[in-house]
Image (cartoon, rainbow, N blue to C red):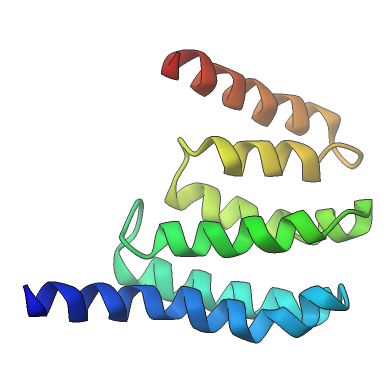
Length: 127
């Protein structure tokens, strides 16, 4: 039992630490400060164990929080490279598909619709 608690704490620490490090950048919407932290957390999650590992949910939570703050087209498009890499960790995540559809909305409408359709199919499968 104690091992489980310690192990879970270690796996959740990067999510907490990354969010704390990003807070200042999120408040001021300075994505030059935010994106490197998310990329570091992605690297840790991908090194930990590939697709759908125990660090992926924390990474997704931090990305969702940062993406919510990004309201301008240019800000959302900055997330595309990271979201594409995270997509490979969890292709069946509706949130990633929706964020990618939104990020590609103006730069590549075909990709945007593709990700939106994938999200729609996932939603229909879960009903």
